[in-house]
Length: 347
Image 1 (cartoon, helix red, strand yellow):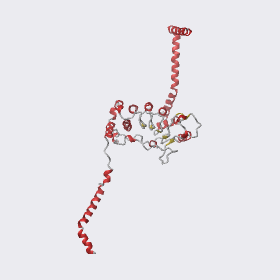
Image 2 (cartoon, helix red, strand yellow):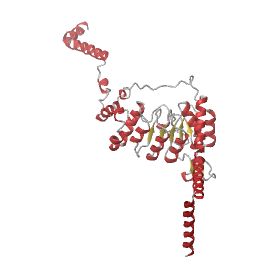
Image 3 (cartoon, helix red, strand yellow):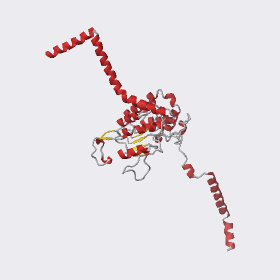
Image 4 (cartoon, helix red, strand yellow):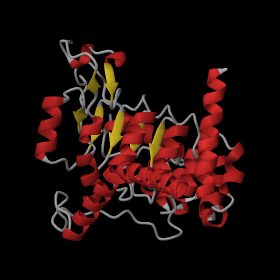
């Protein structure tokens, strides 16, 4: 037996050495991570479109003045990608979003931007097919802007709001706008209602993303408008037979899919870093006294604007009548016109 083993070792010495060498090479490759799986998972080079968007995004502030003329022939997805880059670079305002707005948009993410009510209204009139809108941390948008958004975008299903004291205040003031008003209250449930039975309000709104909603607002919505689900959570079964859309989850950004292939350094050129607001430093349910007075004044001014316009028209008519009664020639002209009218009616 010993002779047989010795004979085998003598016959195949090269084969044994080759096996040992292969094992050593394999171990070395594993240490260096030079295996085929690593190469298969290597990131692909960016596309030409992503490279172009990166160049445009880095120099976006230089072309904002002429953005309306430049982007007029851009496809809808390119426009929304540029808007997403502008939002991340803190350059998104009324002028930029109006220049880029496209009637085929279904997603609008203007969170944390400087867009005001006037810009939101123009975009809502242009993009009537919007089904998901994010206005969180937009301190220049008030309940009036939300009202116009709901009025023009009848396909709106998801609304994301809150995130800052002013935005939380706007969300609370908008609850009465978001609740649909019914023409027919004889139905058995909200789910059985047809859109023709809803008089005005958010006809299609079903998902409200408001991470720091206060208890009173949440209870009011659940009682008065149970069809609107607040802050839905991922579940394989959905809510009342409806699958929760991606846009209704607060941990994602609506415009991420449009810039997923663009290098993040594109919007890091101006030092953009997302800021997280600490709940221990700011209470979203409380506003400074000065801000409360400002919002109350704006609300009162908006409410009394129609009355002031009516009073101005009455004052103008009264001044015209007094001038006619005081001026002899004007009075004569007025009497002559009345006499002419009476003669014409007699004929």
